[in-house]
Length: 301
Image (cartoon, rainbow, N blue to C red):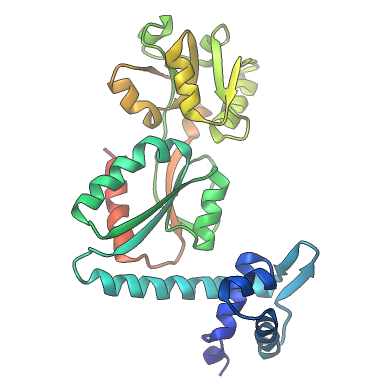
């Protein structure tokens, strides 16, 4: 009996309140009266004999029991969407939707041409590509707001399935005319006397760089800091400055001769990896699986 009740309107209303953190905002999204949502949540709490939300000034926060039910509701919604998209995809994978969240490096250069190539053979597949910081990418995967997350990582994330993990070599990036451009490998000590541009402190690369410097008792003082990797690359290309980056982020610019990239050797930085993430335990729609295969193939080339 309880199982049947957990598949109706009450659960859908509950899920929207969790998503928006507010009964009024959920009601606006669902185009129903707030009182209707309140009644349905009260019905669920009575049915389950537990409190599902804590009421705070900042909004409705799920209790531990509410979190369990929210996970169930989220997966039910994703499964329903997958079934609908898979039925549409039976026409030959010419319909469907793929949502991808990625770090800036992937969103700016790597993913757009890959998506364009995929759509040439699957013209009905819609894509949504969003840039986000690393922690937000995993959050979006866990919440079901994105199908695939791709990011740089150095620590494991709970409740996500890692579809692919591979090393992400860090390189020193500079103008091809820079004196260091002809080195075969560089170490952190070589950067001390450079005109240095670095990512902002909240980036995983900067955090790992700071840890590596701490281990070696080095102090690197950047003259230019940015949370935009393209700005850092442009700074390096324009003059005598150098920056650090993943090779994947600058591969095309290196191949075109605009930038030079030299491997940066350090045991701490070598722990950084690329991860492709999906929601643990979720059966992915056919279109998502098809693009996921293409993505993994290109990353392992």
